[in-house]
Image 1 (cartoon, rainbow, N blue to C red):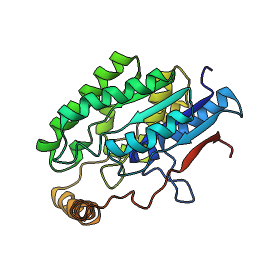
Image 2: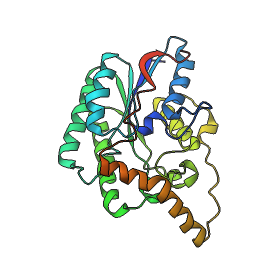
Image 3: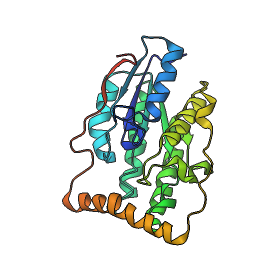
Image 4: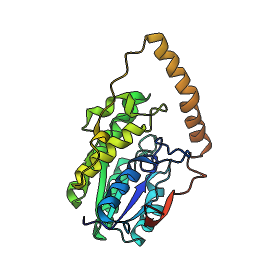
Length: 255
């Protein structure tokens, strides 16, 4: 095992929404990966998770990246930009060079860096015609940057398994526990570390929903999840405004 510690950087995807521990806090793929790496490295293996839901790329770069580098980790995961592409203000000409620069900075620290091409979340959300091209651009940039800087790429977009709605939570945007387990398995595979085979098992697809029932479900989803999201956009608020990082300090998993 060549990694003595691991720092996770990003937004809700890395924070672990919506894979809940019994106490209601979030676990997610990064906690699962850290636990497995700690089992290989021993009790002194350190783990920090700086990710906060709702964070934009610029916030992550300004706040989390310096904190991560200060910890001098051996392994860093960086997943950012998903919230940016949901906004009309997304500017690829600005984003792509900045993304490249940040990953270059992380790699120059000597750390191994994990990057993600995001799964096709837009298959379940409205606005696909507008947002999907931005997601494709982001994924293309991630792949190019990973190759340029020698980062470890986990390509979730190439895995059609994520089209299975059982890998997503009821908000249709964040992964379910099964989704996070699969991501963890793919990350560990990319790192050359074994994982629990059950993490890669895929739940059966749900039976087709009758048209009227599906439309009723769409209306419930719009009221419970879409409307609050729109309200936050209009009022300039974020789901993570009152949230702090769940593991802001590099420390052993047992702490």
